[in-house]
Image (tube, rainbow over the protein chains, first blue to last red):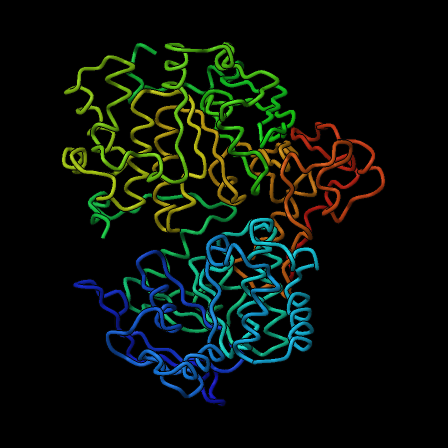
Length: 276
Length: 347
């Protein structure tokens, strides 16, 4: 868990989400301290994206509470003001840069809209801030004025990051935000995210299945398996010395020099359940 | 092959090592993009020997998938193809009708997204036995028996029940194992696997790779394994081919790829990937973005603008492939850079 000292910027307690009979998230709790980064690690069906969606208000928890910057957000906002305040607290960058941007908006217009809505600044100040933000994420002036269709995946993801930062959030959720990027671009975006954290002291929640990316970007990690937290601790400890059998299997499945894939030795490995 | 007995048969890789199974020579492919011809592959040459696993690694636009599609004759309409593809000595480009179907029974393809390559309203059984029944004339009951048998080999025990099910009733990992089983049913000699595990979870990937690798060895199949993951290719392939902007830039024994790469791009790609065992102060990102083949400059090294080792000489001509210590590199400075490309990891 994050170091003591400083009230947590985000706290989840006893979080649970049911979809019909399925328990997608089962009694998940965590605290995120200011300026720290927490990884939520898991495979498909682990509940990691459901947690992200509950934090940003796209899903409502069945039970449990989520608190950001001291404000409860387990229930839908009751006013526009409330909604905007939440936008200041937590922003999200989604996995797919091809579907998360408005195809008719340039990067500048996208960022401008957020600045207008959240800060209500005059045009001159917004222009200056747009320049700062596009510069921070490494978009040149041509790219800033281009529509998403003429940008590459990495450039679009930079736009999405700049848009999220425009609201000056305390917490930024990265939901598999570098998973769809080419290796050489992924490294650029990971370096960028580290720089942004140093400069703005934003806190990250990284939702990821990629253990190497988790190692690079986070201090703490919790490992989810079928909705439950099976292991948690400092990221380096969890990856170097995993205690839970599932974390151990996850770690052993990552290709590396000298790695040989092995069939699972358990009997009846073929009788896995149907897709749920 | 009229003899579909390759199930369980052993092809001896050693005995036939001299004659290549697949020989791609000077393959250049141009596609029609809104009226203009655009190159997607430029002068690609590679050979695969019987029973050999070759990895094909690259980022988006590198041409790796297009290479597999060209080999399986699955290029889009209007594609202009130069160069030659020989399979077992015969010209793949000249095949048509029954000959082409027979060729495709010997060269099976496995795709990244099994859901996009199965018909959602047809049962698994129909999908798996179609090629056996229509192309090879195997009776339906016998085809189903073979399908169940092959499902057992990919770790699916209740095959008879699975054959009656539809794709939506399976998880992604299960469906990909079914795709592998279906691909092996016609007794192919070459497997073209295009990112077969990219859409799967890591633990499922390990399982599917183990199955694919095991069956390939049992049946003595050759494989062209396409991936963006250098580590994965190196782990399961004998040789690895690295592509950039529609060209091959390096061919190397997989065991040597990490410790002794011959092209700056290979080294940079390996160095850019975060390391699960340690946190880097800063990742060694490659500046810029990967180029597609049609964007590559006509008369200089396509990687030069992003390369840390580029000099004036790199911008005077497209470098030739040079043979170096049983590998190949498309870098004019390959010889002098030898041993300097692999930086020691941060302590």
